[in-house]
Image (cartoon, rainbow, N blue to C red):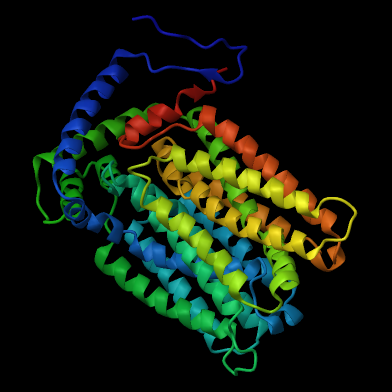
Length: 496
């Protein structure tokens, strides 16, 4: 069979799958996938969900940890209490992102040395400890600093192992929902909870908003510890790589209800073994194209909900509705609805349709919002009202656009480099947030040109991301991890 060889002088080069071995893998995987899909589609939807529920439960501890992380993210980007705004230093404001970066470095490059269950138990203990430190100290900035560092460390440490393991635990026809619901959905719930608390909390209360964060983190961390102990399951792919085939079969049997070893179990073992064997020879050059794509996507995700966005919401909401908390609650709710509805549609609509739809509409809305702040004329009430509603609708479609990012992270990279690549993408996201927290919004004051510039740039980047995704983001719905990997390998860097 003819093969297409890349020229050494080429940069990126399209490399189709040509080898007989890889074509054989495709044919076998396609036949197995069609049989499993036929079986799954003949049973009612609720039965399929109940049967595969242990796969979601296995990463439930991480989901609760990410929920507490969403609370801290929202707090860091400006949805905090009035008293805290007067007293916190920039270090306290950004420390969660610093902790998350440190945790992601550890989780991405060293987590393979420890069982997933042990990692989640440790992250749960960090979440509990940080919550207790915050809960028992009222308006103590040192305690706040320590608690936020610990929570950030727990979230960063959990992100890479969880997304890697979630993709390997899930059956291919539920992988999109399970991975997105494990990270995007709980993070957005946490953001929504903090937005609501920050604008409905009684500032006269002796029990502060930050203490409530601590109590909530302690409770959720305790539940996460219990879930990690009872429900966490090691990746069957990891067990196969260690030569423990019986352990992999047992793990796969625990990932379905009723617990049993069936013909489908052995088909999954065969798929996982092929997946492990195929990735032994893959290097960083196979991971880099997907890493660039998903790092850009996660950076856009950070820009879509940042301190500048929170500042713009506060500006327009105050001008139009005064001290009302309604616009803030609606802002968080629409973001949550975008993420929630898309998370549960990724295995029916696919990953690419929500991504493209969200990027193009949110990009257009961002440019429209920016146009309201452009020009030297003073902003009218009508301008502020239109800008506010554009911002609210923009959040809905931003939630839709970035819900598939978790699924892509779980399936895009060669297995040997999956955790480091997930960590690098996440670190870039945290760096973007950290840099935006350095902006002096007091100096901006009522100068609308900065807001216009930000949203024009953001809108342009989102629209550029739409065009980029049309060409370079594959559709991975109903594919095994190996098939998804082949789709991401259609654009690789040739060897020197």
